[in-house]
Image 1 (cartoon, one colour):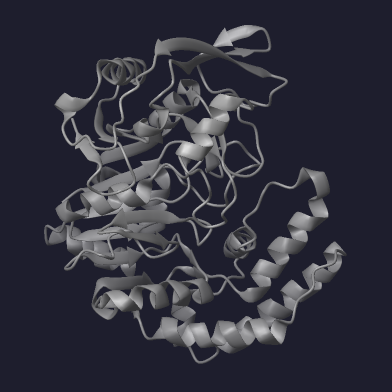
Image 2 (cartoon, one colour; image 1 turned 90 degrees about the horizontal axis):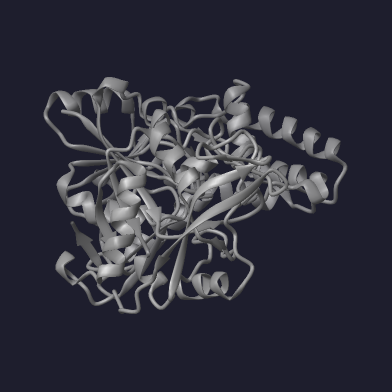
Length: 423
């Protein structure tokens, strides 16, 4: 059996959690392959709103296995908090949630190191969520990290102490004012580790191999978005892992030839959290309306998202890099009420009109070239069938499909799982 992927194609926050929840009924296993608790997947159904940070978005479906892959970094404290929030739903967590032994752990000192590093940058800060993600991946690539499987070894606390001591020396080196009580942080951490140890640890690459051999259907779930990829994103304003399709192979141990469908999710407009270039960003009433109507605040951080028109240059780039086979458009309802919509179809890059995504998209190099389209006034949130979609929105979708050369199969018209139109 092949493995399908679900990825964000912008700067994250595209609505992946909702769509995983919608698609889960078609899969036996939902596997998260990268990122850490700097991601927030929001799901809404039956009058409840749920925000997950590490646990895969299929957790509310009975009979579905949810796997945290080796490419993920886990903060036991935040993980325990997620489990506590799920307790009232009577889910069989022990059976439905599996964790790769090769996943790395975020230590309290990783978070402190993150804060010290960001503070030292001053105005050049990258907008870190301060969750310790970057320092954890640095220890992973530096071959210093502590993995989930280490918790089963007798000497894991010795490894912890050595690494935490190293981190404290590094924090001192930054020479910034980071106030902390490590004893309190460690007490919370070790308590959370005991909860983590009560869950099921597996050799996830072998588990997924056997699952494929046995005909199980698997959906790999990404976090953040393609433009935050450590290699292909707007570096250095990126995350610390590979958020693109290739990250699913390294983050789960799935062979490239086993990948089948690649679902790419994008908003009908564009948002970005934190620092970094954003060619189509709006500073006018249109941007304010998108943010307000779209409730554009980070699910993890609460930070307001910057808003702008849809950037097809960046979206086309993400489609190419990921090999997207099907597109899913989110938040079409947010654009209702605009008389005129704009779509960026090219960049004026240093005096030349280009349609590819260049090395540097800072404002001094890039000016967006827009195509204007007629907007729609209809309230989309009550629509359930493709036949109800207003003509102006169909024209918008047709234009995007032609530009991107990939079909848009799903249109989301609200946050609830029922507010989803299949085309």
